[in-house]
Length: 185
Image 1 (cartoon, one colour):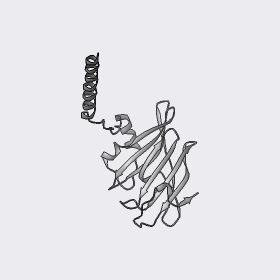
Image 2: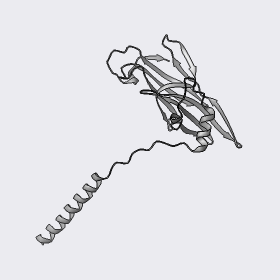
Image 3: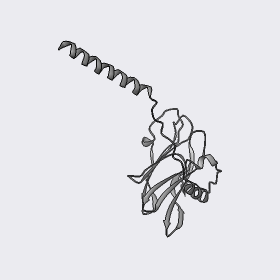
Image 4: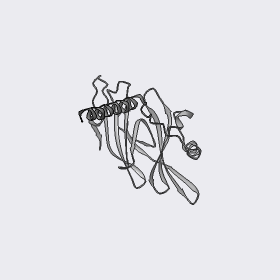
């Protein structure tokens, strides 16, 4: 009986070791970059205005977010700088075989506190499809000790600024962008 139990334990131990070694030996799956379909690429090329220039490889990192049946937010990546990208936003509607688009304006606060509105932004945007919320962190310099943070809600086919925070003093002290001083509303 003891011999059988030792055999069973040895088999279990050997199986566990083999499984563990195989698990660690396998490389972790890499998250692949979303690829645009040829149809989406044509749409991005038609929409993009990119007043500050554009890079063709950046366009492939553009994204489509479904907000309703045949209605999408299109995030067009114009270019990628040293540490953040430049983007444009559009609302795309497909109806009866036709595509209609309009720029989605975003409120931003300028260096002197002035309100700026257009469909572009620079930074690290994240769109949460479940909440229909766009957040963006814009670095003012590479070490991330100053910049801006914005939160926008997608409602009634437009983005509404819910909060904008800015830390203009580049003092070498990092704080979470969500804790920057609020400048809007």
